[in-house]
Length: 601
Image (cartoon, rainbow, N blue to C red; front, top):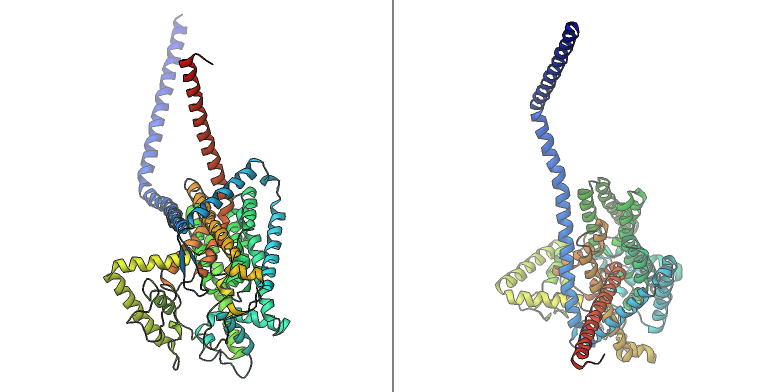
């Protein structure tokens, strides 16, 4: 018994010893961990700072994206309300804008009918049965046919800048080049790429068919624009939204009415949309061919219409935000590629023009000239007393007024830049000294830019004024069929104006609805169209203005139209259902009370 107790005691002491040793080892381990943590405290603090920086960068990106989102909501909500109350049009077929103030009710009626149709299509599941690809090609063909038919039926001819560009293309490479030496092309060298397009068509079809070929080019580009709008809507949202965008695009009348305008406006649109589409795909897939295609497309768009550089700026900003939020440094390369491609192609093109045709390409008017012109005039566009003698006044505040042609005998871009800076200073001083005048000026200017639902498409094919040295008879005096005359002056004109007004309002309402829906959750690429539109809005606050300059913004906004119309229709159905339940509930309550009072069921 004693031996058994001794062995048990020894085992107990051994177990206690092992427990104590394990605890001491644990303490030693903890102390070693503590000491190592203390020794590593300084390096970890630097890591913490780097981690803080990593967290700050996405936060800044999110803040920038929210600023873009809410600025878009505010700006285009205001434009939408203004477009509902006022409509600008040009009854004299000059650029002098007049206002319709009784257009709200027709717009509301037509918009309500359109939303009802969308709700019916959605409820009957018709949209799901339509193939997106087939519809996009149908809309494309429709735009090409409509543009071609209108170009033939309108029987118009080139005037103003269109005629200048055509004459410049004809003179290029000859011994007599008055349009190039000290005149139009020297002041506006950015028009050279489109002049070369005209020159190419001139060699293909000859002088007699040149204008028809330019109209057909516009028709092809209008069709491509409609097709790419459907594809972009699908990329940003869904097949269903893309189908709705395609159906809605059938009623975008100014797109085919502009087929008669031989200028870079319409040809630049499909390339800008293609660039936005390919960049959206790049941001989703990180596939390098998409960013290369986007760079090539936006380069062509800018060469055809220089103000499309706003699209490139928006693309770079969205890629920067994407890189910050997603920590996707592929996007930084995506910024560099289009800038490099555009700079290389632009420089290469103008270098070739200088060497091959011996023309001046770096003597154009500076950007300050266009800003100076955009700030000149009173709130009605009239010439101010302190304006240069050659400024005759514009049709509307901040519109074209002849200012770039003031330096006639001894044109010098440095002198023009100095004069323009002085003009800008005078205008800013006037705005500061009279804030009420400044508010009226910029309100009127923005109204004439954004409230024209036709974007001067009819004016540009029916000028009633004849500029100096452009011909003896105005364009409006040309022979017209009864239908074409009605398009400009009759009931058809009223229908076009009312339908386009409703279309413009629905485009704005749909875009704002989508942006409001995206306020909680969105993909960065979904902000690209609204960033482009905000860029266009900001530039024309100061830049020389025309209503036609707003058309690219409305085209890009159409990428939101399908999803926005569906959202509006769904909310309208929900409100109608809620209202119906309230009415039904009150009816049942009244019936129950009557039964209780009369004793009759």
